[in-house]
Image (cartoon, rainbow, N blue to C red; front, side, top):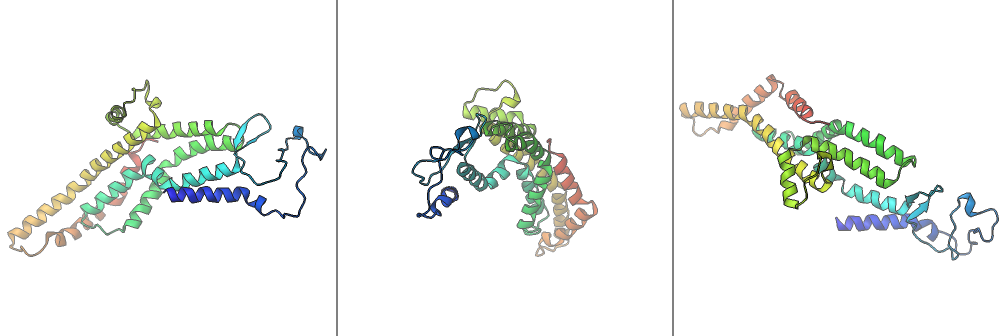
Length: 276
């Protein structure tokens, strides 16, 4: 992870200073406001250094007194966020509950390899996109668009996006899980639920998601365990000790799952279990 962030920073550095290195040494330097009357500070032009050497701009003047992040720093931050994207998806969205429930379903049906792990993970990812669409739309409309249009700074946009994610996570989190993380972190109890710090809401949300997924997995296991018990009892009464019960029970589990429309029930239950 450290190597990836280092490579991202080096890439952002060369993107920022690449044009300066590519300049012909014999060419004349760019005119400055001191020797070119066509350029002035009042027109909004940025004064260049006298030596014309390469450098990285961390912030620029937007012309109305507001400060914006420089291009190099924006690229570095973007690449850092991209490297952390898998962790963000797994811990701050509904991906955890969906993928754990699908794993329980595969084990309950005695088919650990079917569907393949890549299929279930991909399905869980697109289910996550489907469930998180209202949250992403709110963040896009309330934070990203105003920031791009220079109607708010990046600090305010990040604060709005964080509060919207906090609202989604706290809507799925149990109060006892939040209280546990508050106690472990020795953080004072907030006045309202929306005032819960972000570093407390994320682990409490993940803990609550795992609990909910295990509860749903237990409910999924029950009918298949009954089938296993019945098949095992029948085989023992017939004296077929050498025949593994799973050989007979697996086709019956598949038949039962298909007849009741199991996939539709699982998907609809997962989608309706979230409050966005």
